[in-house]
Amino acid sequence: MTRTDGFEDDEFWTEFYDFLFSEQRYSQAEELLDSSPLLAFTPGARVLDLCCGPGVFTVPLARRGHHVTGVDRSPAMLERAREFCGAAGAKARFVRTDALHHVEPEAYDVVLNMFTSFGYFEEHAANMRVLRNMRACLEPGGRLLLDVAGKELLARKVVPPKVVHRGGDLLVQTDTVLDDWARLRSDWVLVRGDRVRRASLVWFVYSAVELRAMAEEAGFEEVEIFGGFDGRPYDQDAERLILRASRQG
Image (cartoon, rainbow, N blue to C red; front, side, top):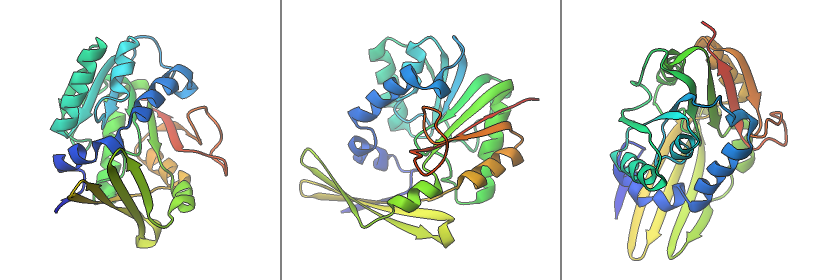
């Protein structure tokens, strides 16, 4: 039995890969890029896919003619992204670092941060720094698209342990609210044959009001909140919390 704490250990990504990045997630990315008005970028746009993982969005964006840089701190995920890119006949640039340190001033038209990849640093100030880095990477007129599971949505879904079967593997996920809903902890137990793997992940969760205020504090303008990639309102029928904002100067 081993234990993996947090996203910093590559063992987490390799052991839990099949549950984090199912074939459905890859096909969903393709469908969203074909249909979402929020993901309709100018042809040939320079796109930063921050926390890109195995290239779920990086590669199809590159295949559609955009100039994409995928940034992630996991060597294992970047290796999978490169393999995916090669198999797809696409060209993309990959950089190994984390969102707290990656800044390329005014180098991009679009910054993407998908699949609730925001809020994982231990201090709120560090997460604010990530937002400022995102803004710094955009040229004036560029846009940020930030996709998370909003606090309002999570409040409906924090229930008794969730059990997922995939092939012969079994995953049990237990979520716990921390610090008066400031953060959430997910404890994962993966049973694979006679082996057991455990992981505990803690991150900040934000409401729409909180995330809007953070984006504005970071210097973004034209901040908009959506409840799905189809551009629906963020209301009782919302599926995601998606923030779109621009850098004006």
